[in-house]
Structure formats: structure tokens, C-alpha cells
Length: 450
Image (cartoon, rainbow, N blue to C red; front, side, top):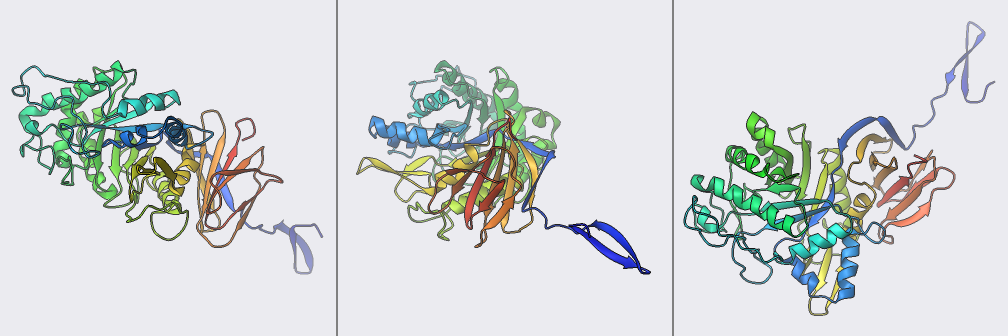
């Protein structure tokens, strides 16, 4: 009898049937089934958080920059989100300086812009990021200056006065021009942050229809800056963002100008794609929590394991092209990736950083997500092919038992992140990878072997 086949008899005559079905592979990657193109992964350091980093010693500043942007020592992030200021600087670490804090005399008056070349240290971190190879800079405004709004306040919601729309659009584009003067090319420009949420800090309301109307004002003005693309609308939740995207897509002129649709995940998580064929970003989120937490998997809901799951869902359920975390570093009971300890003059690293780094270090701008499935429902799997031909497979084992994945061919390396590891590397031998329980395993196969 042939090994691996099933022999049966019919009317006393032996018949050789097809081979017995083997167990399905733990993971299947379908190279020819492709999904979204990846723009990158990033952070924001808006609201003066960079000043916390700059207050540290030179060696620690460099270590933090390495943790954010270096592809060997850290996360290799490729997107930096900047906050466009709306008001004069107030108390430390809460406001962002405006490039036009005072009313120039009306919407038709010649603008009186000011620029200090620092922008609350955002220029410093942008230049540092560029030095590491970052090319995607997303500048976003939380509010127009107070005098442009119906409530006369950069905070507490309010809306943009219709007569100030042109002036506000020029104000935003001027911000990009100031950065160009500093050697930083703003690639993506947003005019609103959480337009469906009234905050006690800088905030401004837009309905989906109002946002679509303003896009048609901003787009032609932004066109005058080479490479500058309009992004919208950074809604408070992913479900809520769908209404903004739908309003823009329903208007041919608005649709013409918006290149990237953005949404946050505070009010609702990613549960499906936004209603557009264009690129989409999860552009801001961190989980709720009341303490600083450095753990990987403690059930708190703001540990590293939670972040890994959120990134996976955004990529596979939402088909996002970009993922931007809030924040890179802050202080106190922050859920940022890093905590700055001002009193001790040092910093601390959370496993949230390494959860994001497992994706951002290896999945590079221009990568394409491939179709991937797992036989075990406890495995959350995604796969990508980079522009250099290398292949990356991310596997988050949500179960309590290890899973053996056989058939990983090529000179692959597996990087493990869990309670005891932070992208700990080991070569794949014999084509087998052990997917540890409650761990994120990143398998990388170089281009010439993929």
C-alpha cells in the first residue's frame, strides 16, 4: 500500500483514492492575493511633549530618538504627526504656539504671520526624524485661531466662521511653508482634529457636510505647495469617521482633494474599512488607563498585548495604510510609549513601544499586505511584502498554548515580543517556528529568500 494514500475496495476490487487530507498548515500566506499599500507607522508629540524630551541629557535624548526612529535599536517609525498651534502659549505642555495669534484686521486683511523656527520644539524632533529617514510628516490643526471662530475661543468647540474659510486655509498652508523653510516637507495636511468632540482644550466642530465644503476651499490652496496632500477628518471614533468619509466621497469636488482619510478609535474601534478606495489611517489613539504601565500582558487593557491586537485589527479589519499612536512620550500616568520622569531626569520604556515596533520596524512604507489565514482561531495573522522583496508575517498568539508552524522556508528570522522579550531574534531552523502563547512573533524572510 502506498504511504499517505487511502485504499478501499469496491465489489472486491481494490481502488486507490486520493491522498488522505493532511492537517492544514498553521498559517497560509497567499502571495498573489493583495490588499492595501502601507504608508507607515508613527507617533505624535504635539502639545509640547517634545520639551519634556529636550529637558533630558544629550545621551538620553539620543536614546529616545533611537527608540522611536532607529530600525536596529528601536521602532523605526516612519510617520510623525505635528500639531498646528491655535493660540498663544499658555501653561506648560498644554498649548501649541500659533503662527498668527492675533486678528490681522479681518478675513480679507493681509496676514501677520509669526515664526520662531522652533514651533514648541516640533521642528527639532522633525529634523531628528528626517535624519533617521522619515519622509512622512502629517501636520494637523486642533482648532483655528480664536478670532476665526464663532465662540471667540480656540478651546471648547465652536465652529469656523464662513467668512474666515479662505484665511484659515491660507493659514494652514503657510504652516507647511514655514516647515519647508526649515528643511522639512509637510506631506499631509489636516484642518480638523476630532470635529465631532467638544474639548476643554483646543477644539473646533465640523459636521461631515461642513468638512466636505471646507476641503473644497483648502484643496486648491494646498495644491500650490509641491507634494502637499489634504487629509481628513480625524473623527473621535472609527464608526463616526465613516460619516465624514462618506460625505467627502459623495461630493466629486471634495473627493478630488482628499488623499488620505483619517479616524481615531476612542469612541469606537476599527471594525471595518472606511467607505473609500483611497488610503486610510488610524491617526490617533491610546487606551484608557489610570497608571503608568510597562507590562506586556496583564489584562489591564493598556498593556503591550492590547496595542498589538489593536494594530492587527486596524491593518486587517480596517485595511489601514497608516497607524499613528498617541503619544511617543509624555509624563505621569501616561499611556504613551515612553514616560519622561522629570524629577529623576530619566525615562521609562513600556511594552507598548515594542508591540508597535514589531510592526513598524519591519513593515516599511510601500509594503503591500498579503492575504494570510491561520488554522487556529487563537492566532491573529497578517503578512506583508516590502518593496525590497522581503516578506514579513506577524502572528499574535492570543491563546494559552504554543502553536507549531512548519514550512517557513528561506533564511528567516523570528522576533519574539512577550513578557520576557522585546523583539528577541532567533534564526528559523528546519523551517519550523514555535508561536509562543500570549506572544507576538514577527517572522522576516529577506528578499532573496522570500
